[in-house]
Every structure is written in structure tokens, then in C-alpha cells.
Length: 276
View 1: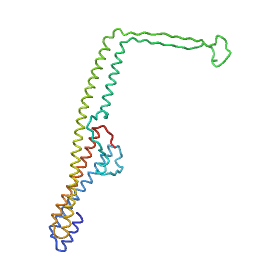
View 2: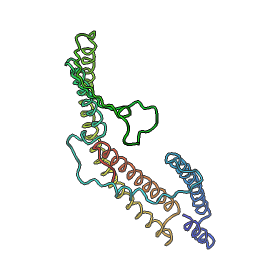
View 3: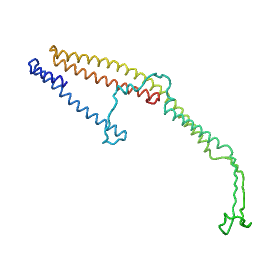
View 4: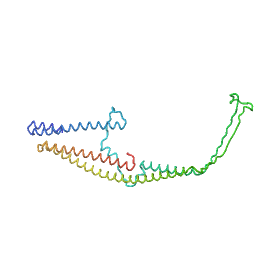
């Protein structure tokens, strides 16, 4: 736009363009500069938010090294799964683990009804000496070590405990049933999330392809409009309109790529896969 503005000013000096054309393109250029300043400030604000989330010092300078297209190419989508992906997700594993622990608790409470037989055995030796001569040899019999041992068995039977164990077993059974219901609901929600993620990805992929074609077409129109204006067969209004359409096509394309990346991330989350 700056190049076009410079060219049209020179054409106006030669008398081949109206002053109105110069004013129009100057106004468009001024608006673009204002928008650029807003975008530069917005980028800095978002970088500060990123620093805060990453725990980086605000005075540290960071650079975004990859664009949306590069990130989109890194998120591979080779095969779209349509089966149940719940078993690969951490939520499923946590709920399933709670069921396993609940069954172990239930078994532990049931074992409380069984009698307990405990055996023990002790062996030691000691001495009572008037002097600290534990490391000396050839001592009298009164200073020798006296050995002793003890063993026995203990039988415990739970005759009645006020139905405490029975209550714990029922409570544990309810927790297990609730966890099983939560697991079933999670599987249903996971299947729905996967189908929605696949459908959204396929839709966003088509939208990105369409917006890419629109961007190529807008580039061609902009190039042709500039060429016509330089040859004196086009108007500045046509150039500015083509530039506006090109900018809109670029924004739409970047927006479509962004939505496509989000749909890929949603798919990764739905399938429980790690982001490569």
C-alpha cells in the first residue's frame, strides 16, 4: 500500500491522476497503520499472558518461531478413529482404578468375618553385670549371657461388632456401583465427543481448503488491479477494493487454519492421544 501511495503521488504530479485518488489511498494507508499498531499491541499483551502461564519472567523476551501453517502440519491426522477411545484416556483409567480399589475394600471387610490366627516367636539373651565388661572373655559363670525364648499363638474371632462390617460392605458396594455408572456415562460422553471432533475436523478441513482457494483468487485480483492501475486503465478505488478483499481473504484463511488446529487438538483430547 505504501508503494502504491508513492506511485500514485508521482502520477498525480505528472497530471495523470486526480488528487482525490491520492487522498483515498493515503486514507487507506493511514487506516492500515492504525490497525497495525493495534495488532502489535495485541501481540505483546498475548505474549505477556503466555509468560504468566508458563511462569516466565515478564522482562524476558520471547519470540514465536512457528506460524499457524507450520503448527497445522505438525499435528498429523493419519487415521480417524470411530471406535470407543475411552480406554486410552486418563479419566477412564482413574474411574476404573477406583472400581478396583473398591473391590479390594469390599474383600477386606468380608475377610473381617473370618477368624484370625496369629503366631509369634521371640528369642533373646541378656546378662546382669556390675561392670561394663561385655567384650571381655573368660568371665565367671555369673557374668555369662542368659538365653531365653518365647513362642505362642493367638486366635481372634469376631462374634459381633454391631453390624459395622456389614454396613461398610453395603457402603462400598454402593460406591462401586456408582463408579461403574460413572464409567458407563463417561464412555458414552467420550463416544459423543469423538464423533463431534471427527465431524468438526472434516468440516474445518473443507473450510480451510475453500479459504485457501479464495486467498489465491484474491491475490490474482489484487495483482491484476495493480497492473491495470499502473498501465492507466484502472482506478485507485479498484486497487483499494482489491487490497481490502485480499486482506479479508488472508484473515479468513488464517482463521480457518486456526479453527482447523483447534479441531485437531479436540480430536487428540477425545482419543486420549499424546500431541506429537
